[in-house]
Image (cartoon, rainbow, N blue to C red):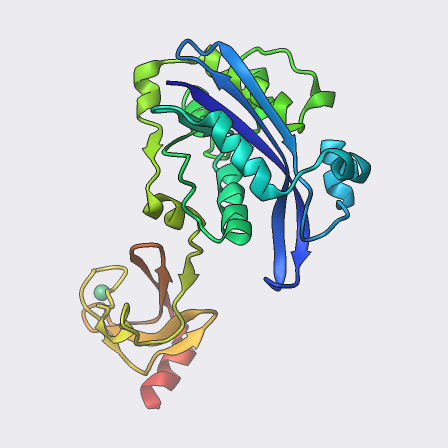
Length: 290
Ligand SMILES: [Zn+2]
């Protein structure tokens, strides 16, 4: 079994077919580690972009990859994936990247260019950033950059060479070595079936129709924020900022509120959130009269 640490560089490009921007992969870098985290092989491939032939200024300055380099050494995405999957295949291999955004972009490109989002050669995945962050004490839950993590672990970093796929892989491997605990790492390794990839690229959205198959705003119990008892609705819901709002009253407390219900559709659930703010007296009186 091997660990495959991969890192992608991409160019943000406008796709006329998708009518929106997408991150198109222009380089795949990877290192193969054995079970003792020793590097046994490396992989590096430039990819000829399909959507736009010209790299954005930001991409060029971040990666130092040039248009000429891509033209000379880049190959189509499908061919690069074929090579990469052949190189990385192996029983129980665990794929890793620094934050799952690389896996997200890979899945997205796979779906766009190969028409399939189930990356069949990746069967186990671990977010190296999540694992490493569990060893760093922090005040907040913000993600930490690879360079900052390296620094926190006392690793010497040549910042000029960062953001080239292979260099970032070496640094990720160095970080892992500093905090390697095989048993603990197991808890961060996911099995990648098709629902894993579907969930990864699923975009949650706010439900804006009051009644759908998934959600019915009229079936929501509106609870008083003070005494938690059921309130009465004084008027119908109106849709405001992708939420449903209505005036409510708690008969027990005698207070009138604006109650807002927000329903967010995620991959497998609908998260419903409710909030009530006390209405000012004038407005409450007016609503009573209506
Ligand atoms: Zn109450």
